[in-house]
Length: 428
Image (cartoon, rainbow, N blue to C red; front, side, top):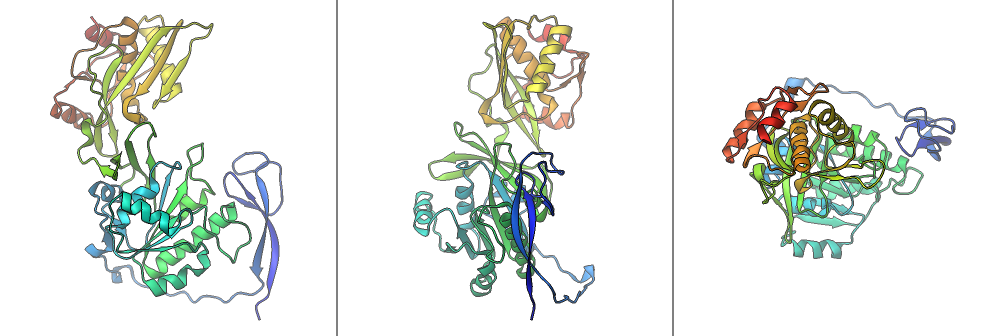
């Protein structure tokens, strides 16, 4: 008879790493007072599994290996559809629309087992009626014990399993409550093994912490095949489904969605979706961002006002604050703008984030336009990286950006040598 023994481990609340002894500081992530004690059962003797192997060329891949979601933009993010036997982690802030998107997706898919730990079946039905979904292929279960999932797979034979969310399920064979670090880690491991064993795709919902990472140990991101994030601001109706890891396709791809009364609607041509209707106003400049392989025209808005305090404020929404301080320094030193006594506010219209340096030129010109209270040329687009010496550097995929801008009727201004010449030519 196999005997069970109990051992004590310490798991870091921040990074999920395990340790045999307690310490005041986690040696992996450097955080203080994050190690929590857990009791773990181990087997004193284990049966050895016989390893079997098969030649790689003996495996077959057909068009049916990927399941189409009915959303062409979502399929694009997944690399062409959901792969059989894959594990997908969908992260996002609470209330951003993760459950709404999943319910819309699985309504178009074959038989789906929806494990709902956050909502009852009646609540899911109300959501489905609001979204005008049929729900005919969706099996709903409120059982959150992952240990019983294998029996449900054998009985129901689903093609897709949705776990909403990983913070609400648990494994009864592991000590700890649902949502604890060790439960999230062990439950994720069980889900991964079941997905590979029965070739069933599993979508796991995970909430995002205030630091922007999926709540729970980072090990969960290493276990899954695909990691996507649903991003956006509640004050805007735009949502971005972004890929950060994909074993079956390209990373950094996005899908642009719009939240409406009937749920999320995909924007198939999002090139000008984030542009504001108010064009050619002081403090406004347009740039072209490259999200994955897709160019997007985005408006950068700036407001420069005399400071009323001893130290000027710099505030950025959708743009890196450190990068903004560098651009202000370059404008002060290289372009002669006296911004030392000015408050500078920057915002990327539409709730999008400008993460790449190609937006530097548009940010600088928007600041200068607001400072001088002069408008930039109408229907103009600017993209270039600004160096510390004031020179303008070329950015990747410039031809693709230029083509998208010209298609939408914009003229591209990106051939200036430095920021001083750019200001002289645009704000005469």
